[in-house]
Length: 190
Image 1 (cartoon, rainbow, N blue to C red):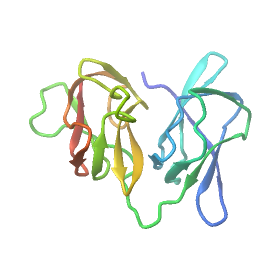
Image 2: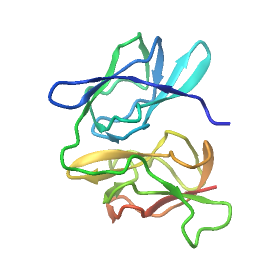
Image 3: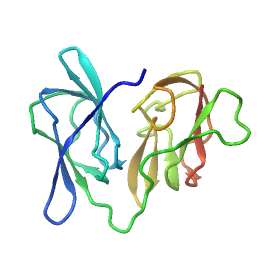
């Protein structure tokens, strides 16, 4: 069963961009990384309040690059508190979310997460850190599976789209530093 969603508040900033705001009192868990691109309905992490948990998402008409200080993995928030700012994308067109697909050649019962744009794929946040996902590991909706560098900006690729809420990773198709095209299979799950 999919977790219910909660939509963040948004204020349009003069000159472009958006201020993304808390939808209420609660605890914000696993915020997106600064520099990551978010599109309409993009996952902003989880929202917890009174032993309930929602997937926190952007409204359907908001797009931009995450700007601002990185908060901790769990941050208590009040109603209307600023979560972060989204800078506008000027002259760059990126699809709204990574698509899940069943390309030819995948084993039956598996799904693929594909690259939302072309760029350089990275499996970990930096060379000294472990990869976001490994074969045999589990992945959950909203979890980063890698980064794609586009024009010197690192964009998180999240496990999201038409995929199970949680799945086992059966294949990671690209190594860190490899060029990928939009639509290239990055991850295979079951």
